[in-house]
Image (cartoon, rainbow, N blue to C red; front, side, top):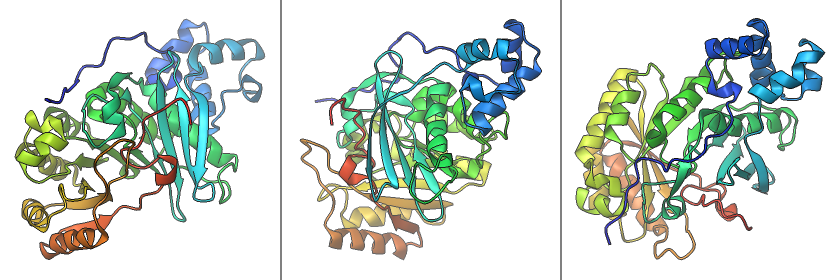
Length: 366
């Protein structure tokens, strides 16, 4: 059966315009159109991005007569929490969100001793059809808006600031676009969201661009475009196989852009941004975990500004595939290291709540 790729999202009704969809200049225009002074946009932005509030009662620096109108017009509710599941003593939290049109997406907050990472979705579903990924099997419902993406991070930031996550009040330090969807297939909204995340307050959340990772299965023209954005985010390429024959089946987009083309685009990105590229590789028992494939991967990556993230495959319901044997995983690591390639095996956090890589399926029932 040939895998169907969906690059263009179905046309659906759009969510309401939100402050986070707009640049600061656009926000000032928006408040002026509501009959307010332009500086009100700066005040509203500070409440949303810095104080993490959308409650008009807290906005005492705004005229009481204007608050409700400004909040209703520029801070509409975009995400409704349907369900939250935690593990790791509450430090890993997966949230199922319902969007305005009923579409479902998931985000995962992971608190470590030295950082807090939020894994965000950029599409409802995914059109890349990778057969070992639960999200890919669901197909693509629609693209998310810039503000819908940003809201996932703001919701996590609120939970941390309010001491709702064990470990005391905290801040988001890292964001990974590794939730539902292919980020570079929703390019404009994702770039807008990244800018909101990294722009200093009150324009945005003020998170370091070096703490943001944008993942892709290898949309070569979009990688080339990203390298010109002036955003030094980390590029993560979901490779999963070093040879075209296998990758054509594991990552169907490989039928459009081959391994060599994807890696050339990645090396160009590294040269332009001076940022190390991350190669994501899900280890699947007896499929892509052979030592000869590790050698082939090592030869492709040797001497490059690169780091390999090996991910023990996270099981999804009904899948015939499972994680590699521990001894095969160790042998794969050794072969990569013998080529001088930096490699780590990812901590599979959230596996028991289906919150790990490739498990986000946004099922409405627990």
